[in-house]
Length: 115
Image (cartoon, rainbow, N blue to C red; front, side, top):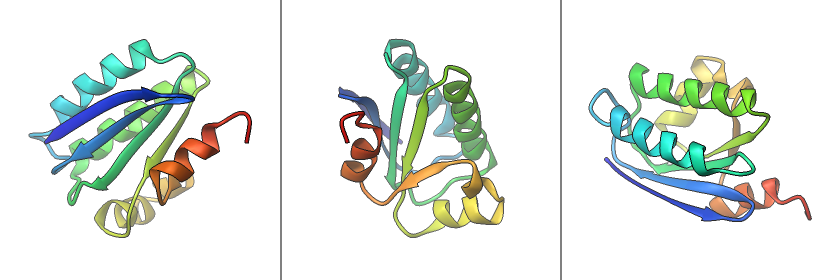
């Protein structure tokens, strides 16, 4: 798994490539911890369009991150293409809790207070 993060006002962006599973989850968690500590305001966009697989451990990382962001009164948007993760969120009814977007630009625009 490869995780790149950067600040792009009004949010912090994480672009994830590879499987979000028991092997990749610690890497993502470490990047998230670093990004969340530096984020002000706490607006997070996670681009998961290049993540072909997510297991229960990976899903747990996403849920824990959403919970943390909401506790801090922030927002988190997942950028998803059609496929496994979108389906996983639907069958677990988590699609009702996660804010999603079809593109990085759309997610950034949703977080822009000027929009």
